[in-house]
Picture 1 (cartoon, rainbow, N blue to C red):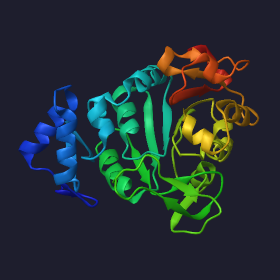
Picture 2 (tube, helix red, strand yellow; picture 1 turned 60 degrees about the vertical axis):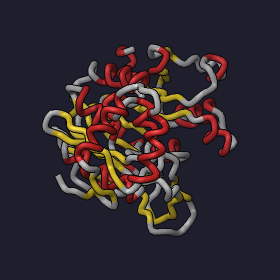
Picture 3 (cartoon, rainbow, N blue to C red; picture 1 turned 180 degrees about the vertical axis):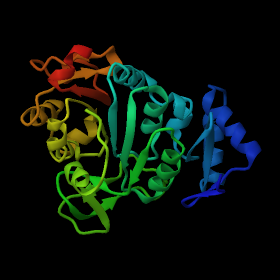
Picture 4 (cartoon, rainbow, N blue to C red; picture 1 turned 90 degrees about the vertical axis):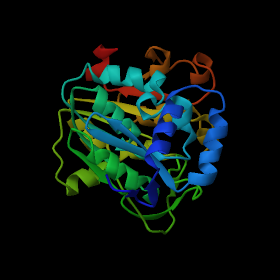
Amino acid sequence: MSKRVGSLQALPGWLNRLVVWSQRHDVKGKYAFYRWMCKHYSDSYVCYNFDQASFVLPVDEWCFWLEGGPDNYYMDEFGPFCNLLNKLGPFSFFDLGADIGTVSALVSRNCAGLQNIVAFEPNPGSYAMLCHNLAALEVPARAVNQAVSDFDGMVSFTTDNSQTGDHEGHIMPGSTGDTRVTSLDSYLADNVVTLADILVLKIDVEGQEIPAVKGSLANIQRASGAVLLLEIHPEVLASQGQTPEDMFGEIESILEVNWFVPKFAQQKVDRQQPFFNQFPAQQYDVIALTPSLDYLL
């Protein structure tokens, strides 16, 4: 494997093994070790090996230390999500806001019906690791260094440059910049991608969730069924003056779907009640199913 991935270099082998072990175990002093690694090895990546594939991630991403590595990444939500996908026939997976490809890799390792992956990520630091991680998968997978919305053009992208992978980086619609943005429908019209009958979209695009759905609508409607995984982030919604009901309502105005919460055993969202009257106020992934797939839950 190359000693460098993007701007990051490999850890010494012994230290990489120690970090992998530490991330996977709940041990005393773990956070102190994480802080020490960030201080002395912030320009390095951690490498995991899965069968014949490798997966790299930044040293300074605390979520991987917290969750036990990329193979255990928020499995209280992504475990039920993958279980649902295993009830499908062949499907194409679109990772909109892919970061370094953690969810794409989880789906690839856990879902037998996965046909292919197209993953979009505008952050250059994350994109280099995304390319590496997708290249190691057993299914055809393509990384695209673009943001996703409901228009095509060039915009500015804000990110925390202190972190190689910034989960909260976002585009500024209406601005001018050097980040290319596209709609999924435009991308698929301009590029050759073999689509399965069922489409699965994971949408984590920091405030562009609704535009991303609007920009994917033509292909969603042509599919025999679609699964959408979106994030409800109370702070992001509040910054936009919105509620979960606003997001649900806008998507339902263009696409017939039912909503489910994987973290709570795929509990169906009652659209007659406020979301946070049904579930504790925190960040969630929610699943939207088009009517032809309602029988799955």
